[in-house]
Amino acid sequence: MDDLFLYKIIILYMLDRIDEYTLTNTQLANFLQAHGYKNNFNMHESLSGMIESGFISVTTIRDTQHYKITDAGEEALFYFENRLPDSIKKDILEYFRKERINLKKESEIYADYYPNENEEYTVECVIKERKDTLMDLKFTVPTRGLAVSICDNWRAKSTEVYNYLINELVSANPDAEHTDPDTMIDPEGSTE
Image (cartoon, rainbow, N blue to C red; front, side, top):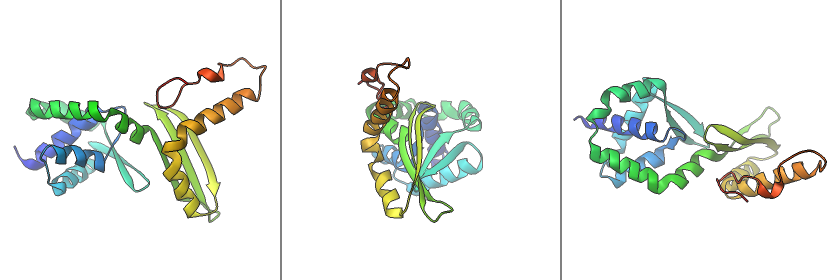
């Protein structure tokens, strides 16, 4: 089997099996290198070709590309998945099992910033749970340094910020019917 073809099928299979999340260059490269596929050129060439062909979509968040399989990619995988050895499929599923929490955090809790028309920076901090957005917070800061600092700290502080906002907003109207704030859902999956 041609190396480039193998890389494409591996990548499509990975994106298909992790379908509720996205995968980054680093996550793909980590798997490939850990399993003896050390040619980064083949990985990048495979990704470029599949983006051009419409088999995968790419979103850039803070200079990191996040890849997701498209309907066309799922169709292509349907026709060629049987050419991927079972041993590689098992390796992929084991990698996902071991890395599930890291993959989830990378895909579901993220922040980005961009310059706005006021010569300041808009920061967007997001928490998702599968395909639902739990929080999408946007605000403006005066400098790029502040924007970078907020984005760098978002993953570590996101649960605390989310719970604080929910508790503050719920407690602002004590007469309204609502869920007890002490039982709020933690965006990382556990109840408080």
